[in-house]
Image (cartoon, rainbow, N blue to C red; front, top):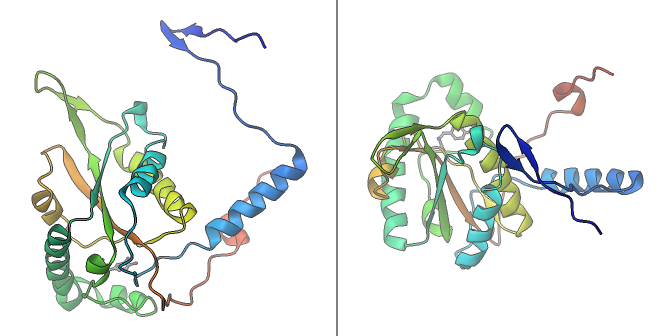
Amino acid sequence: MAEKKSRNIGGFEHIPYFPRAYPQEEMDQRSSWFYDFANQRRSVRHFSEKPVSRGILENIVKAAGTAPSGANKQPWTFCLVGNPDIKKRIREAAEKEEYENYASRMSQEWLDDLKKIGTDWQKPFLGTAPWLIVVFRRIYEVGEKGEKKNNYYVTESIGLACGILLMAIQHAGLVALTHTPSPMNFLIEILQRPENERPFLLIPVGHAADETYVPDIERKKLKEICVVYE
Ligand code: IYR
C-alpha cells in the first residue's frame, strides 16, 4: 500500500490519520456493548486490600493521558500513592476536613441529598484501597527560564481525562471512587506538589471487597438527558 504523505498546514506538519471504522451491524453491537459496560460502573466505597500491580495503574494513567486538552497542553499530573504511610496521612487529613464538612460546613439540603448515598465523615477506603490516584490540574506550566506559560480549558481537559481514567479502571476489572474531600489543599503539602498544581480528584482504586454494597440509584432515562434535532 502506498504510504500517504504528510501535509503542511499553516507551516506545521500534519500526518494522515486512519480512524477505525466498522460495518453498520458491528457498530450497533459495539455501541450497545459499550453502554452496557459503562452502565456496570459504580462508585465503590468498600475495597479489598488485595494488591494491584503498579504496571496496571500506569497503563490506566497512560489511557487517561490520551484525553483531548486545550491546545494539547495536557494539563494534568496523576500521582499514584501506594505507600501506606502517605495513604495514612491522606486519610487523616481528609477525615479532618470531612468531619467539619458534615458537622457544620454542608447545608441541610446537601446532607439530605447525600442520605441515600450513605456517606459520612469517615473514609476507611483511603486506607484499604491499595492505590490512591491523586489528580492535579496544572494551572500553568513553567518554562526553562522560569517563565509562566498558559494552559487552556484546564478543568474541561482534566474532566475528560478523568472520564477516560474511570473507564480504564473499569476495563481493567478494578473499581474506584471519585472522592472530593474539601478543601483538598492538604494534598499539595503531603505530596509536595509544585506551585502550578491544584488538586482535582482523589480516586481510591483497587478490587472491590468480597462484600460490597452500593446505593440503589437509577440513571436518568435517555429521554431525560438527550434531545434530538433530526
Ligand atoms: N465530599 C464529601 C461529601 C460528598 C459530596 C457529594 I456532592 C457526594 O456525591 C458524595 C459525598 C464526602 O466525600 O463524603
